[in-house]
Image 1: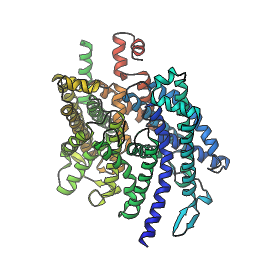
Image 2: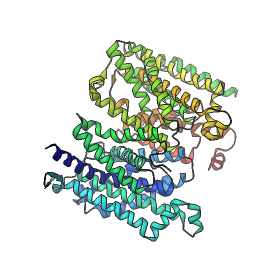
Image 3: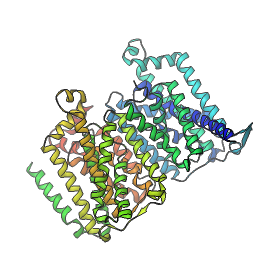
Image 4: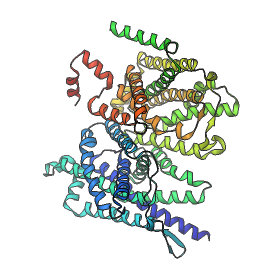
Length: 289
Length: 312
């Protein structure tokens, strides 16, 4: 019985971890290519979640079929976000980057409060709440779909990064913008596209959020911190580290939630504790550059 | 210079007799503004060493809880709340100072943000001691007399300003800015970064904790979602940036202006009044690198548009 419970918790943790990988991907990308820590990353996901909510409420669209539209919308948001929030502080000290992106975080949050109030919102998706029985393990269909799409996009993006010309340009800009520019790469354009793609990935994550969770304007802050937890554990800018760290975070939350008394209220704090503990030991993250 | 001095005296005079001239509501607004003046100065002291705290609510919240819990468990009167709050945060701040010493830039900010959130989760979880989400109720400070409350928080605010003046008088602020500009160079020149960073953290915590300790008795209630709320961290961060960092008048001006703007905005935008925070921060970074103070000072000397271009 106990081993079945452990297996169930492991599966839950992995499903959660796959979702966290996608949540973190955009943050990691902007940090890797532009060397900017985007405190508004989670709020972009929150915005996309509300787009998904609107599509469902006003147009009756399913969150999953809405993903391509949401991704396209958020790509445009990402282009605007680059012009407004990232470009002005690209070469600026960390202080300006933190303050400006944090300012946009609050701006987006307040905008969401005005547009949608602080009420908890949910999209009713009948299939998301159905449960698959796989041997001893039961898996919520919504969580499974979220995991598969999240992991698909994460892997797809990594293939894009390593196999395509644009991905190569992004990698070379991330290594040395000066050298890349001498090689004829339009660095500003790459930054612009990077922001668009990071936001697009946030858009997919936002669509998936609405499958399984209630949303309100404050979910962005928590998602940003979880993503920070993942990159600090896995190393800023490292994608393999990110995937491993996402799984570690997902599993840790699942285990604490299941086995620690009243662990449900403690689980959200794991990411915060990880951040403080890792940074106290290694001030630039576990595998920091 | 002469005009400046007259202005300062005038502000002091108004502050000294304010509750005698105004009604209860405006006095309460003034108390709220002064509480944020203390928090803004507290943030600014730490920022002078180049560390941007995004989790100042942690220091405030621990101060508030220390005052409330010492009242509940040891019958310490709430009148001592500001002192208890300030002193209780002190050892924690020294420990935090050492922990975060080697973190730079964004890593420090992320760590402070995470620390504040971790504190909230912890205080929610440790129900046996903190009563969890229910929170702790305490008797009102000085029997809930608004005028007395005003003078208490005014006193804390004045002490905060005097503390910054003392830092500037003793030259400690030069050590702070040397560390902020270039920590390695500062340490080569004989400035001990560890010493000054921990000092900045401790002083910053003392003020934030005192504000928290006062707030516990003033609101008569402390609960995790409020004491460790991101809103407090955000306000403590944005007010001094908007007013003008590394100055005496900047945090004071920023706190008063933004608090009043928020108070007005709250009336007709009950959900999104925090918009003022986001806009203030964005405008400060993009157009007002030295905050309101920079704007005022720039006008006196040269055209502020020119000084803006020079910074850009």
